[in-house]
Amino acid sequence: MLAVIFPGIGYHKDKPLLYYSVKLAKAAGYEVEFVDFSGIKWDKGDLRDKEKMNELYRMTSSIAEEQLAAVHFEEHEECLFISKSIGTAVAADYAVKQGINARHIFFSPVTLFPGSEKGIAFAGDRDPLADYGEIEEVCKKTGTELHRIQGGNHSLETGDVAKDLDALVEIMEKVKAFCGRG
Image 1 (cartoon, rainbow, N blue to C red):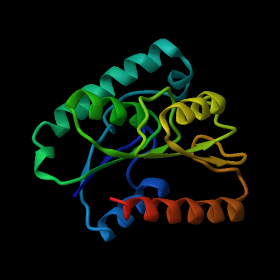
Image 2: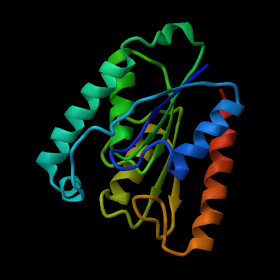
Image 3: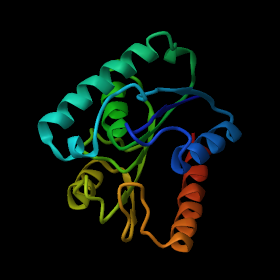
């Protein structure tokens, strides 16, 4: 079993959602591969500009293809793609282009991703970079299980530390269950 981590541009593998998801995937028996977008020059304003966002998407897609070129997906009975932010679009598109029947965990999807009936998504309803209503609509159409983070921003945080920690525990319980479904 293989899990591939597709981070956000500013949300790397050592931040809570991905860090703990990796630990849970490993505990469930997954080998883990990481895509790394750390070399990309960007600024937060780029994420609100459709043209710049499309360019970032093209760059991140190209990086993912390059970094995953040596991975033999066919050698794994199951693939789990865990993604955050722009990584959600990259992961979903990569699976389709490569013909990989991956299960997906989407954190803070930023665009209308080609969802999966074998997917689960977590989105904040106060995310300034994504339209929660659009995400909800796509999830309904594709059968992707959606979990709303009430008052959550793009990091799925509300600003209330105790509430955020409770939400992180709930999210990770769902991630753990999803990792075990394979």
